[in-house]
Length: 156
Picture 1 (tube, rainbow, N blue to C red):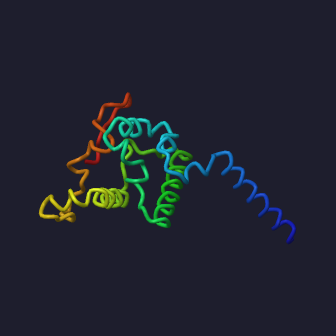
Picture 2: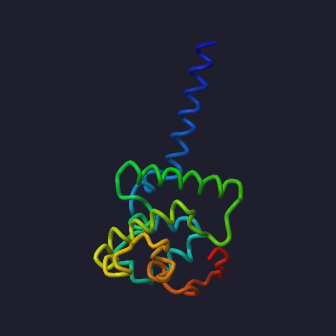
Picture 3: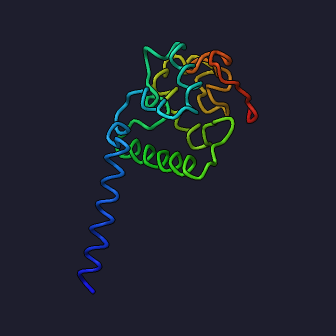
């Protein structure tokens, strides 16, 4: 019985390692924005960022993940799992929208990079109940309609 268990575990390990190799898994550990554009549904988001003001100042991870090591890779793993399952089972939301916990991460990163500016707005009340991107929606990803893909904002 033990050899069958070891054989099963060995086959599982080989299958996982093969999947990681075939998917070029390590590229997702970095900060290259073209990696985020590997999936065609990200074309409009990537193209918007590419033509917007933050291209020279921030990558996807600068805004969409925490900056501490463990929270960053935990968020990347969780998002990656969600993306893989969405594409595998065909449950891709239209339009693509950040989840509420991602909104919090993005807000924290806006404030982290723009602390001085935030301190001069609304008497320095960064926790006024609004996100920076409620008013500055086009800053990171540019104006809507740059991409050839149609955009429909049904959430906000």
